[in-house]
Image (cartoon, rainbow over all chains, first blue to last red; front, top):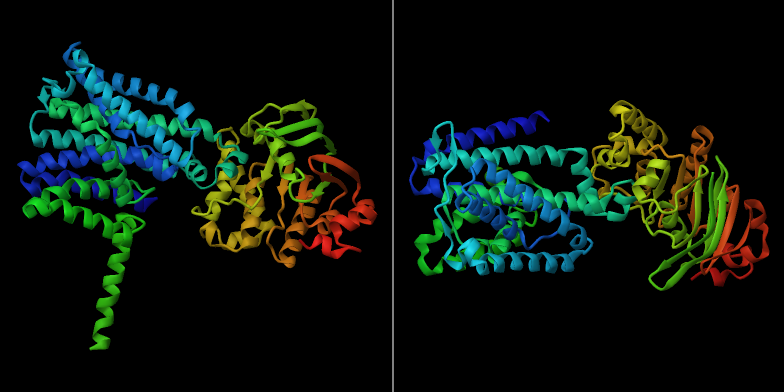
Length: 320
Length: 247
């Protein structure tokens, strides 16, 4: 338990000091995205990595949070601090209701159902032009304000987003280590066995689905208020797949893994920009190599790679 | 203690249990024997609420439990050890046992009594204590079976439903597990309903037995009488016509 706490404190310090190391600028903006994607990956990981239920429609919940926040604060001139929890409650309630019928499905069928859900939400964003502005998007969303500070620069947004991300992380770490976290992993491994021990797997799955949607919705609201402009293109099927990739590459069933996956997949395209047209080939190739050689994700793959390297270094003098 | 009256259960259109009636007195060990597909597992799943009955009555401690969900039935005091063990392989032995007490964490009795019960299980199965931090999936079949039984006991049940605990295990390990069942009955007064393919071993342990065939109870009686019954001998114990039993 103490080690977990130290790890979290160390991670928080790193987050706190990062702006000093990278001296602001464009990279700060990218790191804001790393934070948002970390929250989303954690949300999906709770569902996929812990409870073992897939969702290919999480970009939809992310988008709903963003649009509800955006519409409530622009068209209805609500305070953002009030709009965010309201959006989260609506999205959570919706996920809860939808969760009952669709979480009865398993495996590929659940994947198809959530895929459909994501696509429906995406189409609604595009077609309800009076409400959402349609394909040309929704602009003029206000920034968040707290005690006279307006979060309108990259550095301020960095601290805003990462405060939220750290809160989501500590909440999820606690949840994963609790009795509920154990029950989720039990449902993942053998639903029948979990049920005969008294775990009400049906309700539990719906609850975690709704929780996951609420976190995604909050990430969406924060996204809307930091970017001040949203359009449907950010919430399509491609982004759902990208989230899934982050979770798998980072490591299923690991909160820090979600951070690693989100960081890698957000930063990699930026670093590969120098490779011009070849970036997408390198990107795809790297993902393939990682899935092949790090099946447990980065969070388990990096330590074993390190151990391997240390061992081969120690071995060398003997051979020479 | 438990009484099933005219239970009928379906899997879709398949009529798996046809008017099954049986009963267990408190502290009794009763076994269900029968060939594959006779409905033994279905009876256990119907009692535990996993595959609910479509008609009939189940009374537990004089209260009807027939339409309750599995978690409510665990709360009433019936725990099932599912077929094929179904331990949570990526979790440690300790985590598996704590999951057995899942519903008790919500009640007011506190973690102390749960940890005391875990120690009781470690005295029943010392090998689990040696491996408490080990992942369940890395243990042998026998150890996993012990863990599955221990996990069910963590719910503090009045009655234990066991689904083929001897499956795929060496005869010595089976003996060890059956000895623990006997001890449970003596020390804690646990009532046990045991489903077995290994009819001989099961009838030696049990007080009474029921013989099932294609969803119906065709024979019932004290275990020692069933052991001597000519039909049971021929069909399930492999006497006279050994080749019929050897699939």
